Amino acid sequence: MKNRRHISILLTILLTVALVASGCSPKGGSTTVKELSGAGATFPYPLYSKMFDTYASTTGVRVNYNSIGSGGGIKALTDKTVDFGASDAFLSDQEEAAMGAPVLHIPTCIGAVVLSYNLDGNPSLKLDGAVLAGIFLGKVVNWNDPAISALNPGISLPDLTITVVHRSDGSGTTSIFTSYLAAVSPSWKSTVGAGKSVSWPTGIGGKGNDGVAGMISQTKGSIGYIELVYAVQSKMPFASLKNAAGTFITASLTSSAAAGAVNLPDDLRVAIVNSPGKDAYPISSFTWILVYKEQNYVGRTLAQAQALKKLLTWILADGQSINEGLSYAKLPAPAVTKALALVNSMTYGGTTIP
Image (cartoon, rainbow, N blue to C red; front, side, top):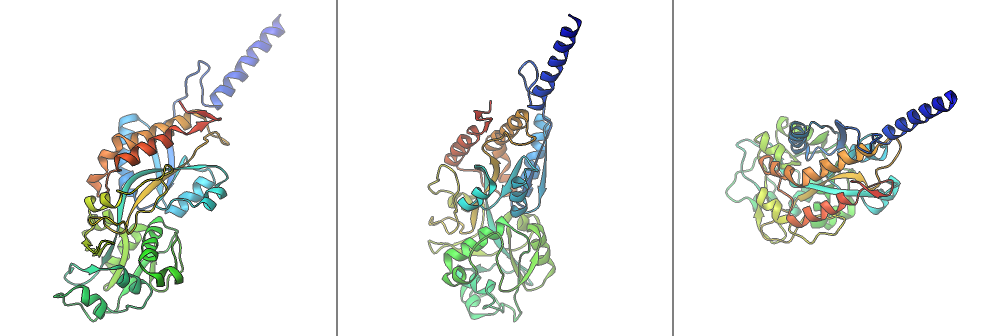
């Protein structure tokens, strides 16, 4: 009888340990998760920093986000060292296959990539796709080049060499910018192409949006691409760009939202550069949080999966109120609806996460 009692106690202990390891309490509840982790894109970092601070103060759940670039975020998710990755470029079918499991793309906002420059007097410049491609191909090499002057009558441009500044790390912002150049310039498309990393024909590199912004600020005659909020926060000038409708547009919340008014696929993997709307800023993009659809993988508990689902749901609802204060456009209602459907499709052990 005594041995039976000891065996019963031992079995109870083992069952309790197993339930806790799986994220459940013996009564069927969930253990409390107070911390989540993510890594990736610098493009939305100012927004995520504010969002996650607000979320922690509201829920008590801290989100540690490492702004290391989209390429780093995808690798961290692949290695399963974070709860979520973040990227300004959606995964191709081949990239998702390499992850080894289905990945969901949850958009969080729409942002704009602007061309900022360092010229005396901070003139308000206009540029188009052909001139930009020429600059970044190393074929338009001086600020008083006739091609630039033709777009900016009445502005005295200096006889000064152009220094191109680009990203040195794998970057979703680079993917957005080079996708735009590939869309508007056959020469760029055939010689350089689009991607998170490309072989730049000319220029110097900076790490992250903040690194590129810093190099532009320090280098007279430079031009580079950065997310809008980095230019706004640092009071850096940026060019108006000619869009697909032939209108020169200055990046703003309105112009980014206009670019997002496109037909959206259910998986929300869509590029919105060079959108056709007359008010659309041409270098706009969604940015995504990436998560595995099936959350039951090595070392991961149900409680973690539930905490992640709650975070994503909050970002798509209450979190959207933070976007515009930091120069990011809110998600259009159709995008929110489709994104919530993706979040609700997450599973743990093949079962929908409660």
